[in-house]
Image (tube, rainbow, N blue to C red):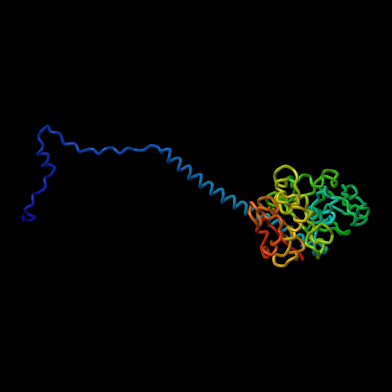
Length: 363
């Protein structure tokens, strides 16, 4: 074996040049094949990208929709709580919860076409802009004599009519009760204080001769908020006479079918367990029983949660839709006091079951 010293030295480029014969061209290096360049996406790749973008947009819109709905629910609950606080302040001053028109008048069968609601009557007494005949001699004095008058059938009032004058322009000036003027108990923004146009001109038949419409309290879904106040501290929870605590028909305009399809329409109202004209066989008695279950204490039978209740229909704009509660969408429960159901619902938060919003208060 040769030692490293005997290795043959490498030839230099000069040596290589010396080995090339004159006129002989240098050998050309082998050329690699050119790599082809793609200048466009295939149709399949474009369709895959478009499909992925569509899926992402759908997920994003769904998430944004849920966030928006949650924000509206929070805003609605804030409005309802502010209204409830105003009711509490009013009760502290006057030992009763607000309502310029008695529940017996609002719920009377004789006044089925007089669609003034308990919520509207409460707003009047919290904000002012009215005077009742029962308030005293001022009723026949200026400036009240220039205000339009409501004359609603009521056997317990003098002459068989409950009489009240109102001024839409004076709503917000504060109520005048028993000769004393008070500051407004409730402050509502234009966003949640207006007219629920989907329900038609409330009170236009037999109540507001000028075609005026009393304001509604609106939630963040532009749906009216229902307010029930207890007319007496004992007796059956619901029904349609003066012996019961609550009168469902004091808000009949928000619950009865009317008009074309849409919020407050025949289709929407027929899906509510509080409507006596119901797709699921409802009538006056079953609607009253269902309201009683919503008003009762979840753990104590036949005891109301408080002196008043405030309800919002929420995102579906249907007050306690039958398809949202117990049962199934194909076989919903429209009578919450049906045989065997009351015990199974004891302790159940029905408001959460129906995805509606509620605030209870008072004693």
